Image (cartoon, rainbow, N blue to C red; front, side):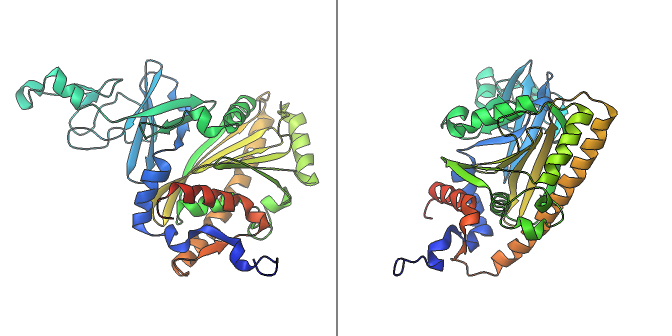
Length: 369
């Protein structure tokens, strides 16, 4: 501070520019940010039946969650034999069997089916127990399946705080899933979170989409490493939703009647509009300059008439437009990061308060930052 006035240096964030592209930083993030955190790796809807599975990839870490007769178990998705991936699809239904040599694992991750064990290995039951897959903590919450890779850490409820009840509420309010998709972006995962955490870019980047329905005058609140936006939809959007509610007999919730956004550390962004439209995104790191955005969307209870499909089509078009706009601007920002002063963080104004909060939480997690 100078003469009681804030200078531009007082507006610096907590993450230097080179943290958005250095390989050693990504390796440290996997150990210190992602492994200790509860990560959403997929959706309960895809794990309803025996032998249903979902997979996720966090950097170099592969995760599989498998349904064993109604019980969900999570493991590192790497065979104990020759380190092949075990489940290769994003979702599916098959035994937990390696596609390379046929090793089959039980609900404890033990390879109970080893082809030609007697002739090739001669493993005892004790040997097989020692070759069990690395297991992870797993818990379902509403629509969402969470995994914690670290063996020790807080419960999911303790990690999420009041966001636990929020995720349960929006899940119960919006049961009608109409989209799941994944998209690859040319940007660091933190840029995805930075972008999701602020409305400052909306009037310019989303001039013909998001800006037409939402005011950037949003109320920010924080809790632990997470944060919320709560705001109001513009009159145009309220009228549209009112017509939709009548045409498909929507049953919107009342807790967040217009607009809410949850930024859940480290890589989740949730939006909830009109108490009736839920979107959920994760920004998973795939490289220093790349991420995979996994997105899903749900609608509130409705009567399922033909008009519902028209509403869904309109929402899909809107989501695609906003996501493509964000993808393109994040690519431009990533290019700038590589050309920036390596050890200087970005500037963050008052409208970027959630970005500042996210970066502070990130900095607390990372050693030597």
